[in-house]
Length: 314
Image (cartoon, rainbow, N blue to C red; front, top):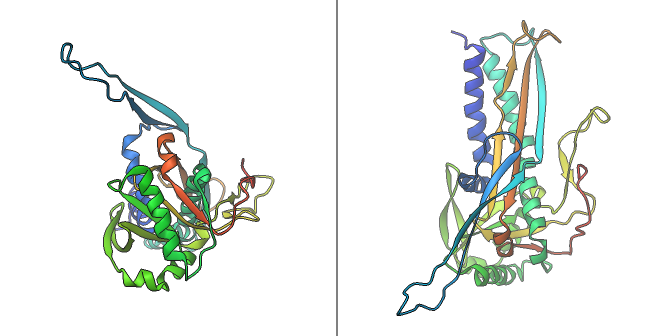
């Protein structure tokens, strides 16, 4: 029996959500969203706690009083992206609609959405921590030494007990894989991204997560595709953008919220514009770093980035 539109939408949503978490290299950031308050709309509230430090204990009066302050910082989600597709009714009937629409949406999300969300997150986190950036050209001969140095610098700031992650471009990982020092010290651990657990190499106790290089530039243009430029779509690195070799940060530093809109599916009989199935896709998302965590993030570049390069939508 053919699925009705509501059931089809539910199937789409489940599979798309699963694919999104499996495909995003940055999905570990989504796990940190449990601490935020989100009630819909564009605002997200992130908790900020401050405590007083130690004071002298009094043998007469006992414990000196301290104070706890818990506030919520309001952040605004900026990335509101969407697209629609139409599948002509003559090409699709109810018995094969799920397969056809599922293939289109699955391929779209895999090749267009996932790379864009990753690119936005890494470039945003790197820009927030640009004051901590290290500039040193990476080669096969020095990559291991530079990586150890950067990891040690972050561990010195946050302590060795704080779990860290190194998100490394595929280009830099190629140098690392060819490094004699790296291959002399083989250590593997399991790293969890959402519901996916993978085995990754470790340097100085820090998992190395490989990210496709085209998602690791320091600036991107996210094309609006508005009425003035309807043919524009997707994203691309900004002119003069520099490759981020790696970003070292606490696993819990970046907080990502990704609001997947429930797919809008309109059948040909209801669609007033065309004798076609209408499929609407919308992705509403952003990533933030608490002010207290910015100092713990270290991006590494081979060349000083020109931070004045602006996003097309800025």
